[in-house]
Image (cartoon, rainbow, N blue to C red; front, side, top):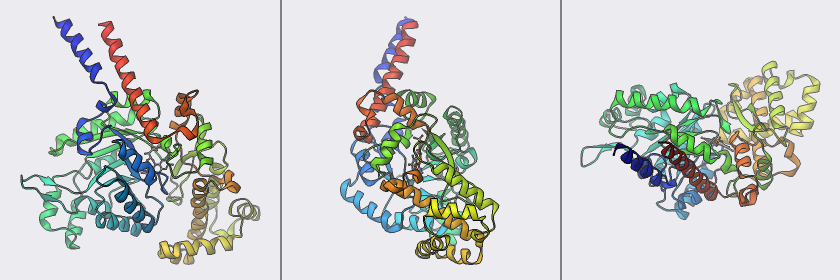
Length: 466
Ligand SMILES: Cc1cc2nc3c(=O)[nH]c(=O)nc-3n(C[C@H](O)[C@H](O)[C@H](O)COP(=O)(O)O)c2cc1C
């Protein structure tokens, strides 16, 4: 009798293992999704409006890649998505910008003004006033007395300290500052003590772009344990949830993440390789060639001076070596004027293809509208001037890649993680091998379907052994 029941249970479990049942049911319900599958933000509109709209149309969640874009560009993406998929689930990226605090605050103003109620908050090392302001703005009690927040955050983190901050209520000092500034009332500050900064948190393992290169098999259990500890500590009405990202690009990878307890999965690298991404066909072809080891860490344009690095494609481009050279020169020299002649010539001829003086003029004009304080500081501080010029090369190198600029192939900066090589291996010999057949929804559905099949086979295998 007992054995029959066990068999029935195992059979029942196998029969519900459909792609739309994977992950946390409350995550799908709260975000109005068919699948617990998210396409993460990709900067400079690589996670394009088209990509986000495709995901929304298939009952999956996409985040527009707002990082690196001007407020006007972000606003036109808001307009476009409001027009093309009204009422559908989607969100925007809110990226921490330590070098441009005004920009982070301006993005929050824009999201609040335009009613963007879901953001993927990323690259935070600690909470900032703007991200707290976004979360608590409009907080109130509903007719049933429950605390409700119009704005939700899915935080993406790879460190326990940062995860702890997002899974905790907003810090009191920020709430007091917001009350003093008239942004929220004292009553709202009291209500904010009952909610976590983020109910959903993505554990981001070794990924494309910014990454701490952590293995998912160690990071995810750690953040799941943190979730349980903080849920018990704060007793939130709605339980906290943890999703998984980093390296997810095969059915086996997704199956493993769900089996470990991920509420949802999030992908990045594979979506850049799809036709809807804001990247170029030239990059899509390069990505289709990538193998597991064709990636490297290179200095990040946005946090260059802090020594932060991003994971990029190595095959077919010299960007990682060139960017590393610039970082070494930045560390070793007091300013552009102090550069050794040979290095100066290399930078001017090979990288900038103009003189350092001209490059500084162009950089100064760029920052004069975007962030004038940077120009003022650079006029006083030669080291900062050098950082801005070097960062301009790093910034342009990803724009050349997105535009498919043929004269700059060797300078393409393409953010990419080991997921790409695994995806190419999995799709070898199938229709998804060809870059022109890679569509975000087709890729996502195949991954989810494959993951469900793998888990079903696993349970059926276990059943036949009992
Ligand atoms: C081209 C590219 C650009 C990215 N840009 C951003 C970004 O602007 N903001 C962000 O939160 N994450 C960014 N990411 C990270 C992805 O959203 C996602 O978390 C990550 O790629 C998942 O790991 P995977 O690359 O192994 O799939 C980027 C990733 C890639 C590949």
